[in-house]
Structure formats: structure tokens, C-alpha cells
Image 1: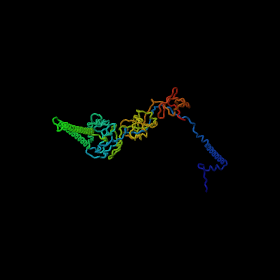
Image 2: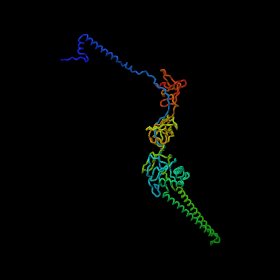
Image 3: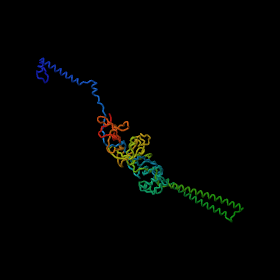
Image 4: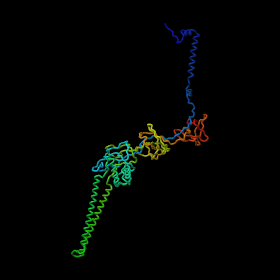
Length: 502
């Protein structure tokens, strides 16, 4: 048997009764038509043509972009990226041999030539003070003293000059006073050097075996010349006695008196001339021997070999890099030293550099957040040039020597002693204040400021929905803002809306 289904929610049999009458059928048709019409109207009201859709999406008419006038303090600064470094970097090179050339280690009696070898290398990161041993070569010390004249020769008896004066003053500072710093190396200086070396645990460079042999040879030459002179004098005296005896009265030889007298006179004259020449020659040999001995004695004694002292302008110094190791031959730079003082180096654009001068305060901030106040101490060509590597650090700049006025300019910042040492070789942000306003002033964005046809500075203020030009006087500029003051007769106050664009 088939079953009929009825709409959900309808009462059983109601729909059948409705359709069974003509009036009910008409009511259903009218209802359906009304529903279809309402749906069509709704859909039509939501449909748009492409032109209408495009018109509906047009942006509103553009208006001016404004920013409020502010009252604030302005500080103008130059900001640059720099690096934290130890100051006064310089290479250390030995000026010559350590010890004597014929003994290697410098001990008298060695007698053979020994190659120069590093027996104790410097240690990077350590601090050296005046009088310290920098390193050892063939068992001999390389000592550090303060001075601006570099070591360039062996210093010993008879030497004179500025390097000798430096040595004498350094010995006095170390407590081994050699006497007057007269610039001439004497026996008192030699004695002071010997005491200094002994205190450090070494023996000073005393005369070698060869020196002593040479001295003995020269002294023997003087003695021989003295003996030769005495013999010449004695020989000359005997000759003179014989000559006077043969020519004495009452002793005439046989034969003609005139011929005998002539013969005797001739013999006496020849003998006298020979004696005189012999005496003169002996005296010249003695003088030459004495001159050679005195010249050698002038330089004979305790010396400071060229390679055993290094003069540095600033002490104490920090050993930054070491270029040799034990067993190496010490040729070329053996180390690089720096001052213990820390500085910050940066490079700024040429236009910004024109705003800077020595003495300006600077703020340094390192990558770990450490902030330190410092001062500008050098600009451009005044920035010390330490090494060739310094040029690389300064991003290829010429340090102010270039004629290119647009080239970046190096800047050096000093910081308090002991600050930032732990940040050496790190980068840092440098902020240098170049000017500030006197308290709070009216400021507007730089974009709001323009110059009118009459050459005056103006800003456009929106008042009553319209833009009104206001004459102003511009001042300090910083952080995209510029200080302004209304010109005579004009008004401008905080909160006024100035046009910065459209």
C-alpha cells in the first residue's frame, strides 16, 4: 500500500483539504508568484554594472597631509659606526745583532759565530714597562726603554748623540745613575749598564776575546815603538861622541892636514844625518802606535749591542701581536705594541665632518650595551696613523691626506682610562653632539618648510579648512625636525596643523 507524505510541520490532512478546493488552489499559486517576484527584486537590487562598480570604488578626493606643530628640545648629532682599539700601535724591530757578531750569545770566550735564534718569544697581551725584558735571543736579553730616537747602532765608549742621552736618562730613571746626561758614553755609563744587566740577571756585553787580543797587540806595538826610539837616541848619542873625538884639537892624522881634516869632517856629517833620520822615524812609529791604541781604547769597554735595546715613545706598552716564536731568526718585526689607552675610531661623511671640531663631547655605545662618554681628540690628518692595517680599518680612507674633499674623514674619540678595554676590537656606535636648542622650541618636520618667491622660509598652516602661509625663521635641524619661530606679525603655536604633503 502506498503512503502519502505531507510537508513537515503541516497538520495532517490540511494540505489535502486546501488543494481539494478551487479557491485553495488559487491561493497557493498567488503565494508562489509573490515569493518568486520578491526574490527577483532582491537579486536585482544587488546587481551592478561594471561602470557602477568602478565608480563606487574610486578613492575620495585627496586632501593635504598635515602634522601638528610641537614644542620640544632639539639636539643635532653626527652618528657613525666605529671600532674600539688600543692606541699608538707600532711594530717592534730589532736594530741589529743581539750580542757580539763573533760570540753569538755575547759571552766572552765563545770564540765562534753562532746564528741568532729566539730563545724566549714575547707573550701577546702582556704589559711591558721600562727596563723589562721583551724577549731573549741566543740567551741574551732584548730590553725596553722609553725614548723617541730609535736604536740604530751599538752604544759604547766614545759614542755620542741623542740616543746616548736617552740611554743615560733611562738608566737614571731605573736607579742606575751614570752621572750627567751629556750625550757622550763614558766609563760611568759603562758601569751603570753593567749594574743594570746584573740586576736583570744577565752579564753586560764586555770586551770579547778578540777585543782583548787586539788591545794586547796595540799595547805591544806601543812598547816596541818606545824601545826603538830609545835605541835610536842611544845610537845618535854615541855617533856624536865619536865625531867630536876625531875632530878634537891635537889629534891630527898622518898625511896632509887639509885632506885629513876634510876626510874627518865628511865622515862625521854622514853619521849625524843617519842618526837624525833614525831618531825621527822611531818617534813617528811611536806616535802612530799611541794613536792606534788611544782610538781603540776610546771604544773599548762595556757596550750595548744594537739589538739589545728597543726604545718606545710610550711606556708601559701592551704587546698586541707577536710575530716570532721560539727558534725563529728575529728578522723583520718581532711584535706589535700598543698603548694601554683605549680609543674609538670612526669614519664620518665629509659634510658631517665640517660640523665637528676637537673637544666636542661624544657618546660611545658598544654592542653589549656599554655606554661611555668621551671627547673628539683628532680629525682627518690629525688622526695618528699606526700601521698599514689601520688603513683597512678606516675603510680605505686616506686619513685626510687626499685632495678629494668629498672623501670620508676619520675621527678619533678618547675615553676615560680603563674604560672599554674589555671591548677592544669590537664595533661601537659613536654619537657626537654638534648643537642643541636653548630649551624647548617650536618644531615642524623638515618637509613642512619651504622657501617662497621672496626668499623667506614659510610653512602652510590649515585654518578654517584652508591653507594659510606663515612666514618663519628656521633654526637648528635634527632628527627630521627643524626649529621655527614665527616672523614678525605672524602667529604659530603648538598644535597648529602644518602641511607636509598632499
